[in-house]
Image (cartoon, rainbow, N blue to C red; front, side, top):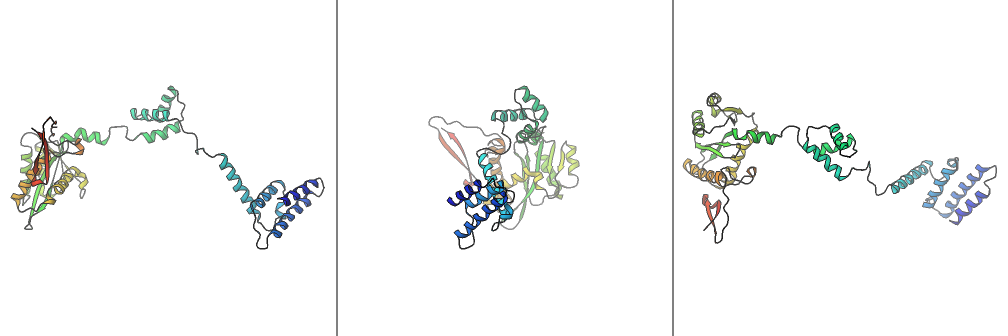
Length: 343
């Protein structure tokens, strides 16, 4: 550091000399010579050397010609890096971009969007200004997009809930017996309460048999307006016309699209997972007994998440009273159980 102090004082003393550029060049060359003398190997600049050349580049236009062992681009890059570090230090602790609006204003925007889904951004801005909040349209659009999770009209869940009491679904599935036979089970389920309205078992699912099951399912005047089914040929070619004759519109699902009849597919999966996968079916009589016992439990006692953990037929809540004992009833030999409080 004493060397740099002597060089600077000598240069300042002679700064009034007409040969000013020569003095600056002499200073630059002397500094580099001092670096060479300090090291025997390839010269390596220290932090004070970099600082010296940065300051010299800002005060003297001819510094490029006096620079020998460092490229001019290196000095410029170092100067720009120091500038970036400086401004990074100056802006520390601040979030990038424009300042955010207050949480109160954000909550107010979300409330207006939820309560008025048909309002556009200009309408929301006008309402906010009337309430004393000066917010731009761009800000309102950003928070409106984040808060608006439903379309302006009713949601699909609301639409399906309003129509579910008038929709039934039906489907066939197969069960293998211990003697490698195949039994066919027809299930009819309602969309609103997920109740299995009708079921039956056969070895030969012909069109006449399937139509007879539909007649039995609607025998007491309770019938849907819409029936969802797949395009299985077992239903026959005149099933749609017969259903229209009793006031039921048949909705055929697309080819190879089981999700289009999701509720029927879901109940079939439940019958398999909670009942048939744990048993070996002997014959048709055995399958009728097993399904009859489980479907009775399914409709009366099994909770459903879509029903708020209630049963399709409405499960009564038994209150516990002093001295009550918990009674248990086994279903399918203990595969499932039903519980209630009793004296």
